[in-house]
Image 1 (tube, rainbow, N blue to C red):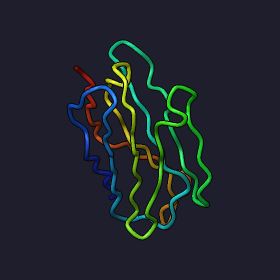
Image 2 (cartoon, rainbow, N blue to C red):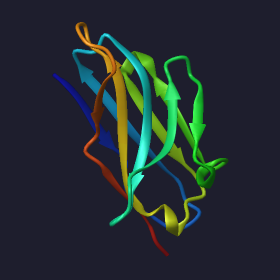
Image 3 (cartoon, helix red, strand yellow):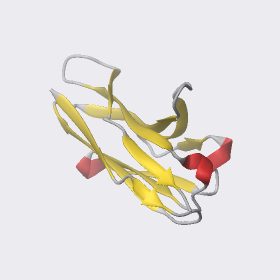
Image 4 (cartoon, rainbow, N blue to C red):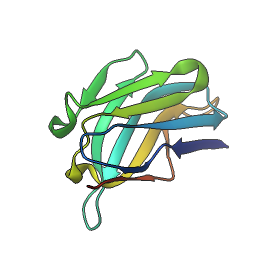
Length: 120
């Protein structure tokens, strides 16, 4: 069993910062990539940022220069540092993990979701 537990959401004002984190635990042989998605009500879940096992990152255009994804391999944890938050960043954020177990490859698991609210 693998668990992926998110934390760090909350209420902030425009221009402020938040850091989300997501820690994986359980039967993980190796982590392939980790990422963050977000989903607004009535919309498709969209990829926000990813980080590969060797550290390569990618971002959607709307968060480039404001958000930074990072990982701590020793803790199987992925972070999303969100700076200069905007009203339109108000959505539920989900972390995502692609990993190999001791028997299977390319397994996926999602965090439970954390709400980020940007409001003045």
